[in-house]
Image (cartoon, rainbow, N blue to C red; front, side, top):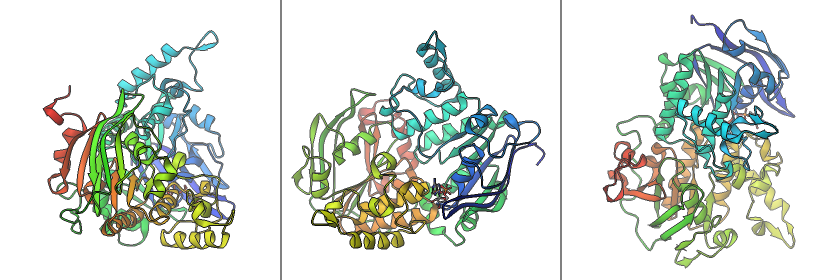
Length: 531
Ligand SMILES: Nc1ncnc2c1ncn2[C@@H]1O[C@H](COP(=O)(O)OP(=O)(O)OP(=O)(O)O)[C@@H](O)[C@H]1O
C-alpha cells in the first residue's frame, strides 16, 4: 500500500456492563481507500466505528487519525464527536438521528446554521442543500419535513449531512440496507468520487456482493475482535462469509444477491400456483400523503394462502404507506381491505391483529420495539393480553416464551432481561421477527424489509421461516428494497412506482433486467415513458 494511513485503531477494548463489545480490535485504513468492515450481528462493528467517530470512548486501546484524512497520524483516543467532525471524520448511523420536526435542509445544516440576523437563513440552507444534492447525486427534497420521509430518503439526508460538514473520512453503518439497486449504484458513485479525491470510506455492510463490488480492502470481525484483513481482489464472497461466521454459509449467499445469471436463486419449493380464496384482498386503495396527493394511488391485489406476494421498487414510491394502511397505521381515503373474508378497512391495529394480521415493520425503532423494555417484554409487545393472568402478566410464561425464542432465533446476548437498546441492530430485528412470526395464529404476514441489517446466517434463517410460513398456508406480503431477496422468495412480483403498481409478474417471468425499467419509471402501465 503506497498511500498514507488515514486511520489506525489498535487494541481497542469496550464493554457495556458485562457485555464485551470490542476486545483487542485493530483496524488500519489508507487514505483514498474504501474499506469494508464485516462480521456477524453483534460482532462489534458499530461499536468500533462509534469509538472512531467519538461517540464512545474506548476502555483501552489507541485511536489515531490523520486530520482530514491526510498528513501525519495524530493520537485522538477518547475524542468527542465534535472534535471528530472538526477533523473531517463523520459517521452515518444505522438508525437515524435526524430531527423529525425539521425539514431536510434544516437537518443538514443543523449545528452549522446559516443565520440571517437571529434567524436561520432557510432559503440559503435550501439552496446549499440542493447544490450539494446535485453535486453528489443524492436526490432529496430540501423543503420536506423529515417526519414525512421513507427510511431510504432519510438515509440520503444522513449522508448529505455528514458530507455537508466536510467529512474526509466517512463511516457508513449499513447504508444500503434500505436502498434499492439503482440507489445503491448512485451511492457507489458518490463513494468512489470521494475516494478518488483522497477521501477515505469505512463501510459496514452485510451484503457480501457489495463488499466485493465496492471495497479495496476488508476487515472481518468476530466476537468483538478483528480476525482477518483481506485485499478484496484476493477473495470471494464465500471466503468472506466463512471468515465471518466460521462455518460454510454458501446456501445463504445466493439469497443475499450474489450474481448467478439473473442475480437470484430459483426457488424450487415455491408452489406453481397458490390456490384457494385469497386471505388478503385489497381493492382500489388510496392513501393520502405528503409528497404526492395520493401516496398510494389506487392499488388492487390479492394474496392467496401459501403465496408470497413481493413488492419491489425504489424507496419512496408508496410502499411504506401501502403497508402502513394495510397494518392499520395509516387511514386510506378510499378503497377496501379484506382479511380472510372480513372487511377490516375501518379497524385499528389491535383489531386487525386479532383478525389474523402480523406485521414486521420497516422501522423497527419507531414501530417494532420499545427500546427501554427488556427483550422478554419486547417479545410479547402487542400480545400482552395473551400472556395475562387476571390483570397481571403471567411472568413465568413471559420468561418461558423469551427463553424459547431467544434460543430458536439465536438472539444475542441470550439474556432476556437486557433492554432491547443494548442489542446490536441485527439482533433487535430478530426480536421483531420472532414475535411477529410466532406470537399469534395469523393468516396474513406483512413483512417490510425483514432482513434489514441482519447477517448472512440470519438471512438464511429468516428466509427459511418465511418459506415455512408459506408452506403452512399463510399469505405473505413482502416489501424489500433488495430485489434479490424478492426474487428469492416471491411467487409474484409487483413493482411500485409513484403510488401504483407499474407491473405485476409471476416469478418465472420476473428478473432484475425485466423489472429494472419499471422501478425507474422507464416502463410502466399504459406504456408511459418517463422523462
Ligand atoms: N449501548 C449499548 N449497551 C449495551 N450493550 C451494547 C451497546 N451497544 C452495543 N452493545 C453490545 O455490544 C455488542 C456489539 O454490538 P455492535 O452493535 O457493535 O455489533 P455489530 O457488529 O454492529 O452488529 P449488527 O451487525 O447487528 O449491527 C453486542 O453484543 C451488543 O449487544
